[in-house]
Length: 156
Image (cartoon, rainbow, N blue to C red):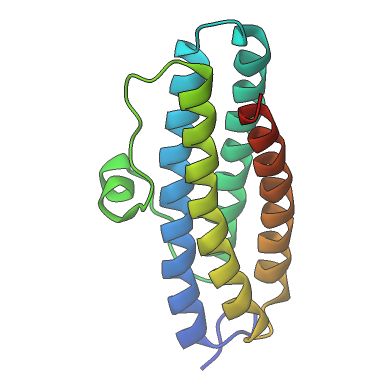
């Protein structure tokens, strides 16, 4: 049986679950980065305060794109933090404010996103779901670049 965009309904149901897992991780990371933005202190305050605002805005856009893809596949995007916390591999980050701690946490959590995005990319590619595969490829490219840049900052 096919869904509204001519993909297998079974595949779409499975992909919706994976995308909701990704959405949950993105939403938890979004709140973590908001906290980093609000609480950063030290010599790198200005640069990181601005960078974290850029990152959480990107995460907000990602969440919207993921939720819309879930809807296109015929599913329902999760939309409560209680649901996100239950399934997210990324944990809430509380009370960290130094440059090294926040940057290292962002790198670690973004790697969690990459792992899931690569899994979703492989699954989408194997099921002729070019739109989901393209979305994941875009996310992966942006995040790999950010991780490279953040790791360069940590080597100071």
